[in-house]
Length: 191
Length: 162
Image (cartoon, rainbow over all chains, first blue to last red; front, side, top):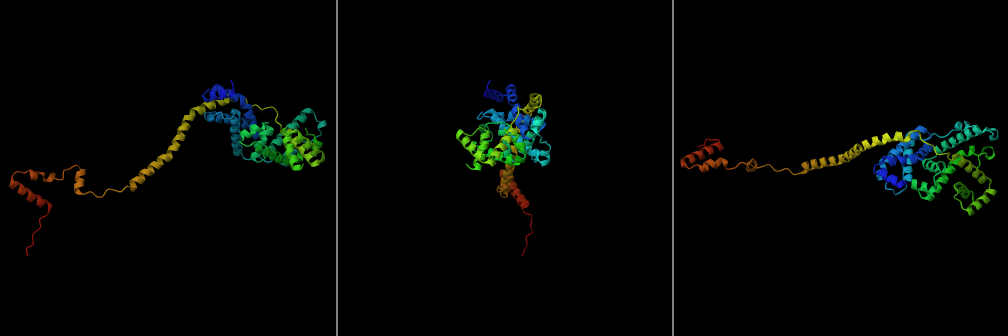
């Protein structure tokens, strides 16, 4: 059964159809919430709230856009509300950075390298949380979630040109914040 | 190419959104510009660190936890709708009360009624009191009735003799 049929059935009151939609999108919605919130319990609760809101708003959804796009829009608005209620993300301090040891990678064991990479990723994502909201949103959707440009354009209701320029500005801001910690040891993190 | 354009193109190249010609021009620029080369390396490092891993799964039993909440919402829904409807009716009700009060205040009140009007409202014949007088056949009795009626209306006043 295709997605539109599932949506129509869910609109007619079929719990089974809505369950299938939830099964399809729960990881996507949770991952998105997680990349903004960085706390599993809170992100899980946010994902539940998103599906609850979507379920209640389903009669108003006229299938003009894809269900996924509509759901992502609800998710982003909800996550923004959650973040607003929790207060602005703490700026990353130098002390946080020093928690990550910069060691010679050649001498490190594989597991240790992976641990460090994960720690670095966590740190970068915390820097992302410190960006102004509109830049944080676009960077999360593109670089953390890996959504294509046209999808971002539809979710945020922005022109492709605005997506391009805003994303560039967001990356530029993040690069300036991260510059002291990037490409250490002669570009060990270069691709 | 200037460094500002180069930086923009580096960002686009991360998403594979740079055509062949532009990519060639950017590579040429990077060969001769150390600061842009450094910027390109930093952007690539950043992209690698931002890159998402595998999609994360929510906490276990996601649907099992969601389903009772949906059912609960379904039960509450008519109540919530009624509440919203009731809330919308409050201003309408207030407006009607204000209108009624205004009508009551500004409508001109009827002037004081005459005695005949009052009798009419009470559905009383104004000639009922004189009815007996007209119906009396005997002239002497009628004369007496007229005398007593006039006595009732005016208190007796002693005539002043000059």
